[in-house]
Length: 288
Image (cartoon, rainbow, N blue to C red; front, side, top):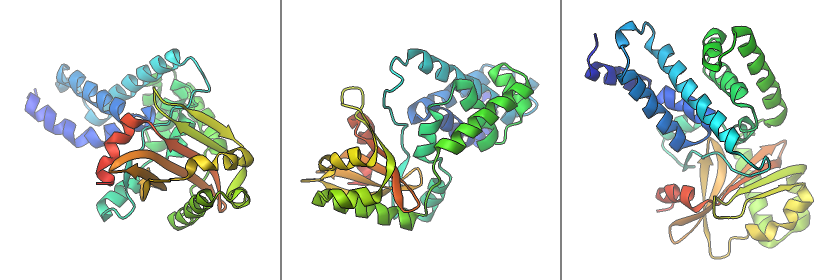
């Protein structure tokens, strides 16, 4: 019978993977940490001597916890058009190689937005199988279905992701297009903005619980709002947002907004703006 100390050491070997699963399933760093902590509590209260494959057991547990959270979130969601961006993972663009490697492994913010549109069981099946290689037999146990049904859930999610999630351009192209957009917005150059934006571009702005949230579709509508992108009195720093190039605007060391475009074929197809003061406060270290 392993001791609690033995279990704690073994659990730590799996923590990062479990957190990766939870973050991709939930799109929330705080909820992911809570799910991982709850997984540890359940392990510490279990008879671990009967667990043959600890990694698989822990993945099953954290998967079920996240599935329950997704179902609860879906039940509470009143407005299907409500804009809430997933929690970003942000580092400096000039981060050290180790941080850059971690960013390269991050799921893009654009993909997390797409995953938010999936049903709880579809998201669970897709994340566990396609992103972490969990067998469908195990996924079926988590979602309460057969392996065949779990396969269908992942396949349905995969088709939706393939259609909705744009491919990511290389970072040099991302920065070039982002800087061109920022410059055109600063100058109020409507025509230049239209050249940079895909005609069917989408903008999502998340102001948090107390702030305004905005969903805008179409290049002309986004370009018409370009005055709101002007950063008078603000400083900007290039950052990596889940591995993609973005801009963090700040004033006196206080983050004001996080601007992340998705670039395809040299044009911006999506823009995500996080302006939630509470979540932005965690990024103060990047501008200090």
